[in-house]
Image (cartoon, rainbow, N blue to C red; front, side, top):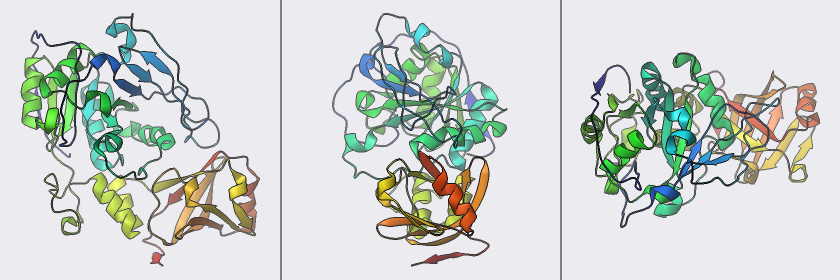
Length: 378
């Protein structure tokens, strides 16, 4: 998604149903209509509190969830509180923050450099938002798998994109896939304009949406023209490693572009240099620290079961050049990943005491590039 984009902007009147909304990122078997009134939207913002997985709910004929971000310990924590809203307020009063915004469309699992480019292009045209779906795996029957980015770490990453986006942090808008999976490309674009009040969209050239993934990027441009929205189609950010032969050749969208699939592949191989290139940052592994009884420690080594991890770990092996951040102090360490546990070894005993003496709820472990000392795969 580098470089040029194709834009079309025209203001027109439109008339479509007010009870249907859809954006579907990948082909799936879809069978019936769903009410727009009941689908959920999660809107991440900058408001902060402490604990990991907390949401504030408001009603917009939808649930608007505003995760709260971390406080002092690591900028990683976001907590989820839920409360009910009502259906009585007009949409313009329920999500006013979206009015006039530019929405980047995609499946933002890894928050990699291709996703960042979408946010950059959106920020050039207005207030940037990322629009994606939650719950696709459950609905489509995919096997559960750990996310690449821990839920409570996403705000930190989006904050790091602000310098690329005119010093504006992109916000996320997540829609419950089960509530919108049946709807058409036309209904999707109509709701973006009429219900959410966005001014335009940014999408990659391979973007698909709507019932049975019927719409492509060219359809998006045409529909946006009809409904008075700006549409910017961005060229893919290509992977310079070009490892497509090792990936799923049955994926029709695979053309050598940076993707979350490639990030997962690199983590599976334990190639942290490659992971860092795809992400545009070091991979951060998030460890839940609240259940200390499950941890063991001795001298300069802390061990925890993998069940305490909130996101995807790299392949089993020994990783040098890692670090943890405690009270803004960077503590160098090495990490050992085995079949059942993860082991953190600080190079100095004094540094290790900083880790174990803190009452941490979570711990972020950054995997630096193995370019200096390499990674030994067990």
